[in-house]
Amino acid sequence: MAERLRLEAREEGDVTVLSALVQDAAVRVADLAYDRPARRFAAMMNRFRWEREARPKGLFRRAVPERVRSVLRFDFVDGVHVQGIDLKKADTVLELLALELAGGDDGAAALTLVFAGGAAIRLNLECIEGVLEDLTAPWPARRRPAHPAP
Image (cartoon, rainbow, N blue to C red; front, top):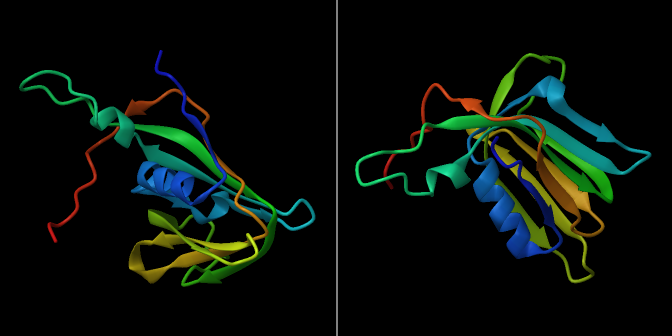
């Protein structure tokens, strides 16, 4: 059985690692949630397992591409701002491209989930406290995500 990933983010470098791991995740609008009283934001996603791709499988063999159901969660969220996403269209699937962090002098930060097509969700954070956790066993992906060369 594959190991399930669980990583915590408490500083900028941690967010950079999480960003690499959630790149190309498929996120349904219905799977985005902000619990204002608990000050928690969570996004359920089908995450491509980039960490598996980095492991050599042999001279001419590549790993079978996989996805896994994961949750990305941040606590101490003081506000959420959505751009380019119709929250009423629950079945819309978004492609997560990156997590971008902008810090303030007081320890507060703004974390932006950047999606394909110009969509974004900005979280106003009192401090950085996040978790990326795999919830299921992985399954074979139809394909590897492809990115055009710069």
